Image 1 (spheres, rainbow, N blue to C red):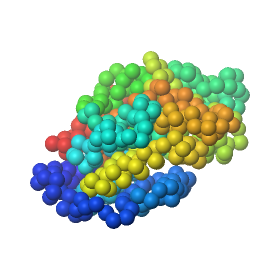
Image 2 (cartoon, rainbow, N blue to C red; image 1 turned 45 degrees about the vertical axis):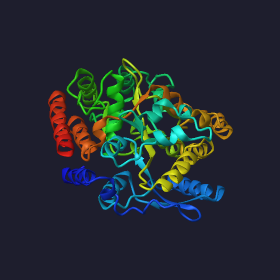
Image 3 (cartoon, rainbow, N blue to C red; image 1 turned 60 degrees about the vertical axis):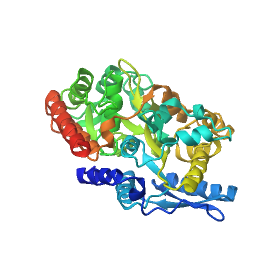
Image 4 (cartoon, rainbow, N blue to C red; image 1 turned 30 degrees about the horizontal axis):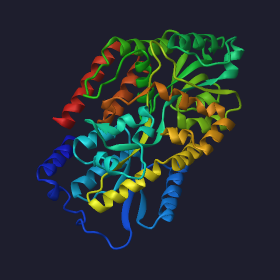
Length: 427
């Protein structure tokens, strides 16, 4: 997030609502159906199911017509939403990466959903949503977003490689056990070069920070809290960073990895992945893949991920229409279809208990592990919402696992970089 963009937005907000939303249509009761625009992200099956649900919603009633517009990846939606906010030409509903809710809610770009929840007379029940998945839709005590396509990080294990190494056919339950499993699985040739290793640590910009967060949580720590206080120099983060680094350079039982191909090609026995990775890994592997909880240590706790629906409409009538669409997209029936087709998690109790969802998990019990892990979730670190937040954390992991730099020094440098990014964005 660039400072000049936020300064521009704040200046616009200071002019008052009328000036900011100068490009929005006047609040006049429309003749015929209310037309709203939905900005979506995600490609493949996740994109297709959104289009199917939009079409189904439009066909199910005559009061609202939704126009779905693909806007690219989450990062592209972020930039386009900033530009639309400055121009006063916003969509009505937007699919956001969950960490960005607080950022846009803070700047007044999102509409609080509290008023719609309060006045809804259709039997809508906010308590139906899974607490760990709706929690990051709140900012400063008000609801601004609803969960729709949610995931958690998982550990994927090659059960065959574990058994061949004399280990039980199960995932390690703690990070200490994770380290020991990796030692027993690793093999080397006569020259001391690795033939196979215990684990691959993901280095990608969009996910490396996510797995690191979960590991820090399990050690009882945080990357940053809701007030953007950074905790990387504290013992839990330093211990975790040291553990990962030691596995790569001292034990020589793990390696940095940029794809799941290392796992599928049996170069590593264990790898991190999203709930959404499950279908791909299970279908492509020619060995026994065990999806499992991320390892715990002092506790089991992981960050939730995925997307939420937020309202950006500036017109009263379109806001009402947007609310109806958001309810539909997160309904038990619609969410069940998302779960079955994509592998994302149920976002509500009613979706989890929906007949089609129940049948899906009965037929595919291994895919239920992410649902079982739901009770051990919390929102992602606040610094993820900063423009360079994920890249700063990716560089941190690179310094640890490729550069072999001192963990304490790396944590100090990363904390300073994140603090600067925060100050450039908000001050």
